[in-house]
Length: 182
Length: 182
Length: 264
Image (cartoon, rainbow over the protein chains, first blue to last red):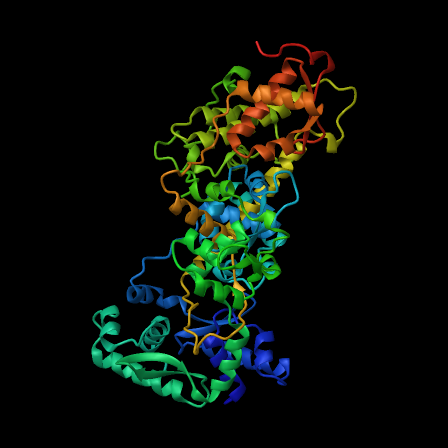
């Protein structure tokens, strides 16, 4: 279907510097009902997911943005002359997960959950902008308080913290581990 | 036509920061004949020129790149106004940091700390409402005196300037390199 | 004050070889993220019910692993030792003669169990998040698209407290390059810490150990504090009360110890 609304939305998502939310699109397209915009975005997501497209619109970080399809990672890295992107270390990922679930958190709270001093992992995560300092805790020593950042959601392809693995998913993993041991 | 070559080319053009030339595509896709690449690009240009697309691949500057369609210029301008969110330049950040920790300060005091004339950074920070003029110093020339603003605290989620991280805290984050964290 | 002095180590030949270890029997400590990871590993390998941990046995296994350490650095060692001390503490609590059976919430192991369960959840979540990370790493997004036109007057700014502070202190460092002080963790001796603790106890009569712990920051210092308190309690100079493990420890100086010289 040839929908001009879908085209406008596509161009807006393309130029947006961060995931483009429904609210932003509405603010730009004054008077267009949210339902129409949502329908246009849905159509766009479906179109770009098709096999004959190399670039797709994905829903992430609470909004939409363009990304390449995973199949072309090798060629893109060749073009940009970038090595395979590094994963986080296990220490880094653990620290990030602890903060994600229990934020806001201080260094000593994170370290207590992990049973390991987490100062240097926090540093790495700060440098990668996956967490941010949001202030201080009213507690002895007024320790700095950390939260996950908007980049964190993007990094893991989440739309909000609600999309973190649920209690059920975690319980399932633990069940599987138990079964594997038996 | 569902062509994987077209898809690869689309993703390469998408991630390229400058017009992507035939030569560079060829260099990435070793062994693929130039004629095939040219055909894929032509197909892509034709596809994206169609009425149902908001973003098109255009031939410009000796290569190809994505651009929005001219029809949506007005909406795009509106969007960029709304979401414009710039990071401070490093000069701006330094100037702001100097004032935050050492306020109240005059222009020449800031410039002395930074070792660089800071007049234009001060102007930018004033425009962004991150600092404010609080009066004049009783000194030769009666220079203007700057302080950080209430918005500054808001942006950083601080309650007061006392909550700025101390040198020790930052040093701890910056200096602790531990073998435990890869 | 080593763990070996507290508990004689018996060889347990039934420790399973670990797949990660090339030498078969040698399991290196550094394959574990930390002491909790090691504990969870032992619990799994021994097929132990996490809600009913045989503390004596697990403590023995745990100390054994610690004993095999080859080259872990001091910080890590301190963390492993800290949990060793806690295990021993729980064991001692369980050995205390009691009038009646412990109610479930009084089980000295409960807080350790809660902590292990919590950590286990984080680890399980990590395995899911790792998959997400792997999937996302393959997708390239363009986060930077040059703005179409010049600056407008009023712009919201993205500002990070970390960037700001880092910027300031780097600037100061640059300016006074010669007189830069290097900040290092203090060397904490038991003697100094003991004096400090006793002084503080005299002044305030009671201290909240967790509060004290947080103020001291470094793990070594905290460990030393912990051992000092154990030492004070052992030598009957102080009374320490902890309602729940990992909660807070309140410490009083015994009245009759006020004038004694506690430093031999």
